[in-house]
Image 1 (cartoon, helix red, strand yellow):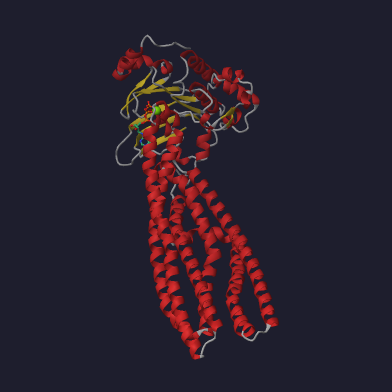
Image 2: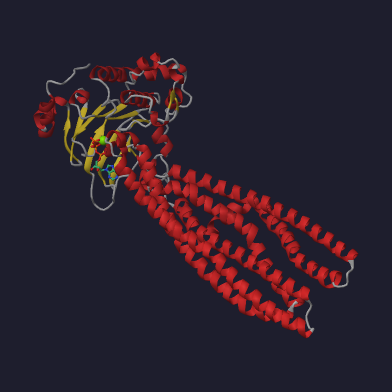
Length: 579
Ligand SMILES: Nc1ncnc2c1ncn2[C@@H]1O[C@H](COP(=O)(O)OP(=O)(O)OP(=O)(O)O)[C@@H](O)[C@H]1O
Ligand SMILES: [Mg+2]
């Protein structure tokens, strides 16, 4: 309920539509309520007295009221849809905006499957609730109250029937609404699981095929899909059984009304038309209650959706802008870690421990260490993809938490370990690094990243279109483009996380040479599992289990670091010299 209220301000710009819709609905309801009374007059006055002119007049009146009702109904639907669709679109826009601001930690905590469900089906549920509310919230109760009042005025003799029927109907609806709200919550949870699985399967389809795991994945999907089906079935069946139950109660009411009515007609205290009108009103009343109950159920469903949407909108972004930003425009590229500790889980399971080092501007820093030793995590802290649990990271002597995120990140060219490219042309992917890049910039960056060679061979050149996930490129080509995208930034700090793992040794040496020639002032971090990639670095950080085991130049480490010299021995004979 509270969650829904919080989202209500999204309706403000569409107030006009939201008011005019229900108003037009009132017109339709009034016309609907008028019909049985006109019919009753037609029977009791016109037909009984065989007054044909009167019958035709009332017939035309019925037609007219039906037409007015139609206009009201159609108009109300149009305006209700207008406001609800805008309302949902605006919410979806803000949800997207917020998700974009999410830190990695924020995204990890939701899971992408759930985030997709929230942005799609939860927003849709909310939209449906708004449409239903605008159309039915007035219609249902108005039809119900209107018919009760009319029966009271025109068929008071049969009113006792309503006194029995109404409480039973209301109790039924209450029971079903509460139950369906709870069931729908379970449906949504199952939907999250289906979306998560689906997303995982699509992302990993090649691996699944290569390992011939289709059957395993199919079974896994079947489990979550079956759960969704079961929960959906229970929820839908519950909602659908409400109608026949209500019909049954109303039918009993009709029989009772007929029975009482016939007795009174025989006594001469009631006219036949009144009984007919009563039965009609009983039906209208049930319709009114049914509509109200559908609205209530839809609203109950939408509460949980609204809550989930608010969870996203209210998420505190844990990587925040500084309160008092440091006045700094350009960087020299000095990077310093001071006793940095970091854990993903924040439960003391440190992935980085007591990391301290200082990289002078223009230096090349190599990082080596076994898999899982924390190399990628260490460099992810520099552009603040994550914040350390304790300790400080400084750029040019300023804590990075005191820098505007945008300023910090534009000063960094980052080549992530997994080269993620976007669908679109090669050019648009490179421009991701620098929007206003000239043709020359593009060519220079591609050249430095040893990507020119393959781009030149493409008929379309830089206009070559990448498919989703750059599926139409080889692993090495993807890495080259990811590097070019970082180089084009002409950043002061360049981070290459194992970015040459799929590139042959000669090309790698060429890239490194180019890099130092073209960007001599940049501080470059090179993570690699190969000594050959980092041996020329000014400083090499040797990582082991999240700790800095040693730091120094290649020659120093050969002497002083057991881990480094072990790696060196295991790789000797496979090195490629460069420089
Ligand atoms: N998003 C994450 N959430 C939780 N734990 C993570 C996450 N990313 C990495 N880890 C854990 O942190 C540790 C260090 O990971 P990291 O990616 O920094 O290793 P690495 O040295 O780069 O390894 P590799 O050479 O294989 O790339 C690993 O134990 C890993 O399981
Ligand atoms: Mg890594």
